[in-house]
Length: 220
Ligand code: CDP
Image 1 (cartoon, rainbow, N blue to C red):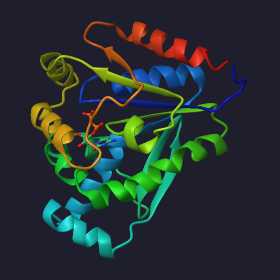
Image 2: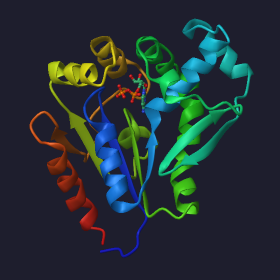
Image 3: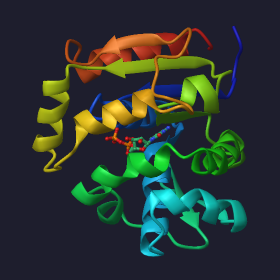
């Protein structure tokens, strides 16, 4: 038992598996800070798209041009600024970005840049007085925070995940993103070793939160 330990939770899963809903519920309950790493990949992709840099030329661009990544706190979420630019949710979450993001996310130069940044975020949360961090994405338990105190992997049936996106009013290329994200060479989407795997098609959100809460309780 470790009292007042700063808890790091790695939350992984495919599109529409319930990561954001789970992360937000846990952050509200425990006053943790939330990092949505998908937004980082979306932001880098948009930054490059706005410069007319295609995925084919992005690696060369990034190896010769350093980008300045900084963090901003928005309630309990960390928002990324790239060279001072912060994109809105509407700019990052739309059909066009859903279609393009995985082409940039599979590039080693993009992942290396974000990995260094993402690994600085547990300290950012600590320094801002939070009692823990929940970071969600595709490679958090496997690559970004392999020593996380708690690892959770969410999954659900493809049709259900597609229906969730439509219900949110988002057209999403889930099948092709799933394919690209889980077959890429660097940091593919995977259920990390030691993760608690939860089917959110079977368990409702309050039960998912309960399972994560049990894990958190073992630290207090
Ligand atoms: O919200 P949703 O799960 O649909 O997607 P997201 O979390 O916003 O992630 C968008 C894309 O970023 C994914 O399809 C991946 O290509 C990429 N991504 C990644 O490669 N690694 C992460 N840790 C998070 C996202």
